[in-house]
Image 1 (cartoon, helix red, strand yellow):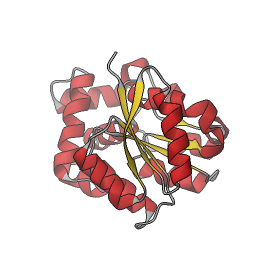
Image 2 (image 1 turned 180 degrees about the vertical axis):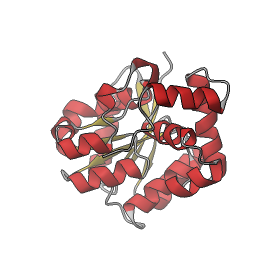
Image 3 (image 1 turned 90 degrees about the horizontal axis):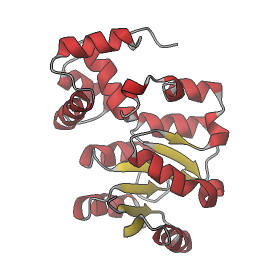
Length: 218
């Protein structure tokens, strides 16, 4: 199995050092870059293009959720794993909506970070157990535990694109709704069509109806 290339974005040098040591000890992972703010995180995505980037929400350089959307737009294939001290439902909602693939509390990092990295690499949405128990949050992350096996390989963002495309939205409309570029939406759409072995929008709509994805969300 190819080595998972991880970048660390956090403004605390001591924490970055600890995370690097922890990750580099894994036989299937290595740290390929470190960032201390949002600007340098963006630079690493451009220069290194890691498989996964761990991200602290409270780094200097701008609004966290805006910056997350920016990172997602620049590097749609990179898994963005929020590693934060915020044990807060609102932060989890905001991070997932902005395109994060996972959300792990720093207090749980020693136990859960490696599991989270491997989970997001497998296309799963990973949240810290304590937060995942919140009913309102479970709704926001699409109740992924109940998603049929046919859809289990899709990321959270690919699911959003699938739902929107099945409802008849154009790529431009989806891009505006999800704060992405049209090119990024096209990439997500092509990837989910390939994963699900679909050939047309009619196939996509049929799949969405079969799994109840067009029902109004509460």
